[in-house]
Image (cartoon, rainbow, N blue to C red; front, side, top):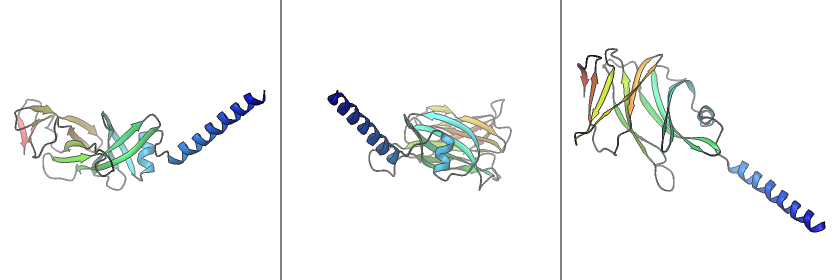
Length: 182
């Protein structure tokens, strides 16, 4: 009987110690929104979430810049979510029919193997633009995902490879007329 109690006591103590260790180093939280809040990312509206190998990319309108769109990478593990990095997509106050930009978001500033996620994204202000095609130098083409939100439209594409240049970007009408090209 005494040996059984010692084994139970040891097991209980190990579980309690592991619980305290895990709780003290846990940087993850239960939802994407809570991870953003924990990182002091003030969000007015989350407009889209995209699942990628590195985690989840969140497209959102921040509280402080309500005429702009932003995106950020949130890592997911079995214990929850952690905000990794983010950047702006653009401002809806532009006079251009659409904007574009290239970003690498991810763990590139952390110790260890960087897991940067390349993203080409922008804002659409010309309501005639209904499709965006990104064309690379090697001839490959990729259709962008367009997200509608209360401010208008934003778009993004994850390039298949890390580009050293900005590819050609075409904005098309519903009748396949080119409205915009960079």
